Image (cartoon, rainbow, N blue to C red; front, side, top):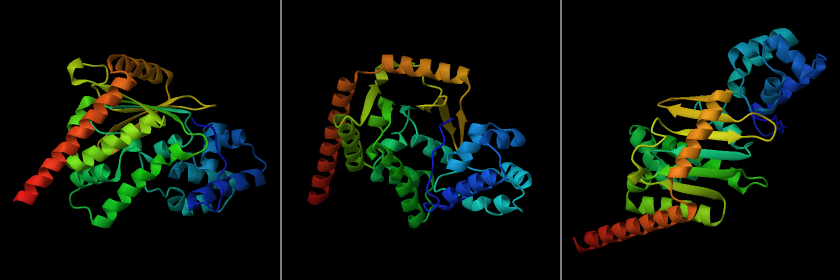
Length: 287
């Protein structure tokens, strides 16, 4: 998993929780490896808990309290340590995106979250949960947009996405929202923030029809693969899974259009959506 990072305890309750774990471990005179052995996890896993890269689970909090003699501190404060605007199955993925050297997304149905605009995200959220109060909709939109800050840091990841052409043809949020979304992807590509390839519908059967997945690599840790379903998701670092996912991604990239041709397709589709939006506006004006 990703190499542990040092967080400022003042940044969040989660960072403070990790800092307290490190303090109590060192006070007990234990190394990360020694505490990990007592918890039946690896030393690097303990480092990830201390850095906030991994969220504490109840069984680990109980073990830490018992091993370090912390009088139930870690169990009592578990809720604060797990605080995240993201769902439980996805919070670790967001943390790993911030530490990854490379990120590769295969997206068969929707624009990947890291590339979404506010209007596109809002349309998805409202379609998925039409009874959600507006303030909760906005909170989810902002949480998703916040993930894109990784592109603006001093060491942004090398990001590569293969998108099925279905994504371009499905009008999420209407023509204006789609034009904005596609222009955003094109702008990211032209600024060399990302590489995007389009897999044309004419390809028919392809290696990625089983569903979306995300691959991430790190400087000093094994690669991971994330797969997602409805209200669930799974992170895997088993070598066989990573090897198969790498082959699948290579097959998809080989079948997709070149980045330059993909950019042409995206920008042409954006123009078509702009024309459709303009025609709708003119029809309303005439009505």
